Image (tube, rainbow, N blue to C red; front, side, top):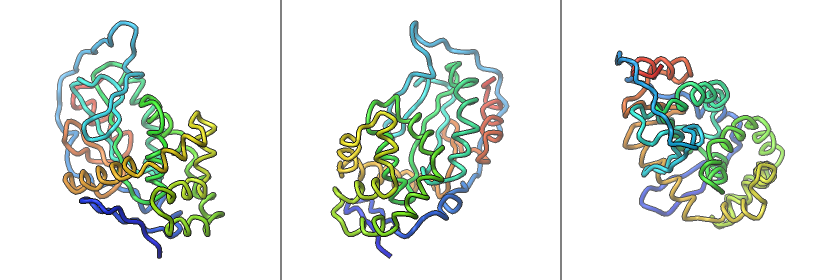
Length: 253
């Protein structure tokens, strides 16, 4: 089994075996608390003139991408893996009503952070950041929607994927991106092949994503995806119904 490791203070190693089972194995949060407060309804907070909260994106100190009012009284955070089927399901079923019904009001912000599980996950996490910050979450959602095809590409290009583990880090993720079909996938969505390769060769950014994931997972005891926090309290559950109930109990309507 080939592995990759980052020689930094927060060392992270990933298996480079075939990872189709990770669509299931990478999922399942250790949900514990949160979502049980019964708050009064919070009034909507208008966006500045000429803007929309659903088009407002900021980057947090933790390296997450925040959609919505950065000063929202209710701050929802998701730790997600790009190779997690349950995360893909939440992207498809939860994020549309979350944005339309809650983020749009200015009462709720939604921050997406990475819990990196494997090299393909890290490659996608790198590529969705390869451009304007406003594109990060939309590109993530499109990658989750194509997850089955991405795994099929890896299976078909197994030898190339395995061989990538022998390459220097600045070449390794380019090879992973090619084996998984990610460079072509993102090229069709506004990230040119040259731009994608440049991002996948950016070792500093890749290490930052991996280290943020390792450090935050350790600090918050996050071991499964998706895991949700609302105002720093862990939500009990991983479905949109669980998340919506927590938001409404906290005052979002």
